[in-house]
Image 1 (cartoon, rainbow, N blue to C red):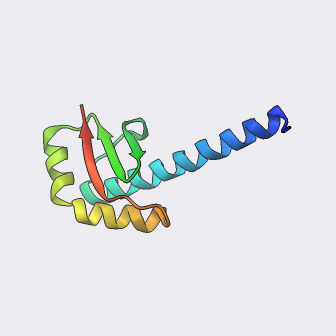
Image 2 (cartoon, rainbow, N blue to C red):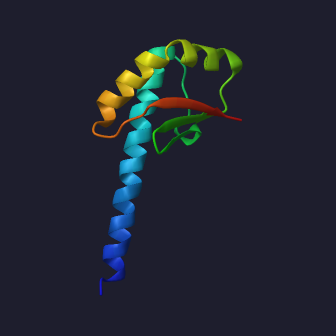
Amino acid sequence: MKSISEFFAKVQGRQMKELLARQSVQEALKKAISADVPIEDISLKSYDLRIRGLSQSAKTAVYIKKAAILKEANERLAPRVIRDVRFEG
């Protein structure tokens, strides 16, 4: 049986990977639309990038530059793949 410290190390490693992935996407968004999206408002679920709390003009900018954002994010996140951008809230 594994010890509790091994379990916590595994959980911490997964959280760090998720944080780094969200930070990479945040940088790709900033480069593409010149808007600072808080890392708390970015989530990655299956093959979707979900962004919360953007203004309508920022959503439009993301939609227009969607291909460039997805390309940049996928280059940074390889082998993980993002296929679509969705907006929440």
